[in-house]
Length: 114
Length: 115
Figure 1 (cartoon, rainbow over the protein chains, first blue to last red):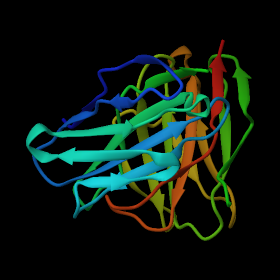
Figure 2: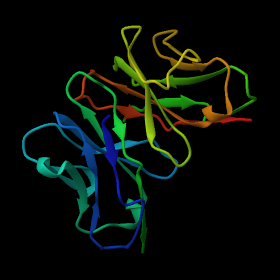
Figure 3: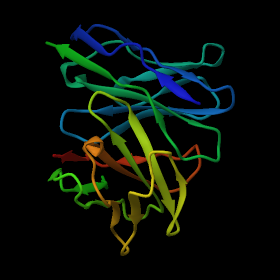
């Protein structure tokens, strides 16, 4: 069965530090990859997605992610975090073209201190 | 920006009772979904719905669960006889189109507590 792993469960950073959150998936076929963010008390929002093409994708709020097919990874990065980035971050995949089912990782809680 | 809205934000019920969780998807969206997240666990897919039919469901979505679009705006999840293990956050989502390359927009969730 397909699965998604996020190895960082809780990350604590100071403002201006760089961020990288890991995401690995297990599926040998075509995947569509997503990062969602959930700010405290709010709904899940799409940060960025990868379907095809340039494996380096840019999203909202200065986030980017790189798809490395050989490593089954889709890590999220931001060069300089802000206090307002404090949130929970979820990596998710859909396997192939014919399924809507999003498979989520466990999420990473990011706390940024001023 | 259009949003998916879910009501109530928190529902408390007794074991064995029926509950209906309500969602208003984004108005021009045609595909609808329910997910749940048990405390400390992953967000899990329950069901997808299109054209008044279930298009895909997980093994979690057994006979105790049903979904309905009773009118042009609401999308509901019914749990017939709640169990303690149904306690979770339930998320509704909607999208313009289906398939693996669609973008699903999520509501803020309904926290269901079964006592």
